[in-house]
Length: 119
Image (cartoon, rainbow, N blue to C red):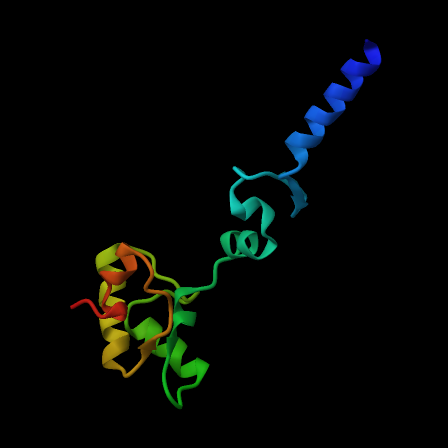
């Protein structure tokens, strides 16, 4: 009887862990958030790149881009400090300076920005 219970318990635990993997220091199952199991996703979440990195200009150099970013209202660290309206203003300014937005336009919020083609 005890052997049957042990066998059942062992099989039950095995079935529970079948869909699990160990990744990024966590045991990851089907309902675990990807960021906990994907090292690259966790890295992007913990250390996001500055917004200035999403802008490029043909023949431009990074020192010039940083200066243009600050002139457009961006912060020295390559991000922006205030509101969404300020972010839109920075984007319009960068577009006027012949920069191209190279970031993702993959959600409703970003699609509504000047860098992704919104007015």
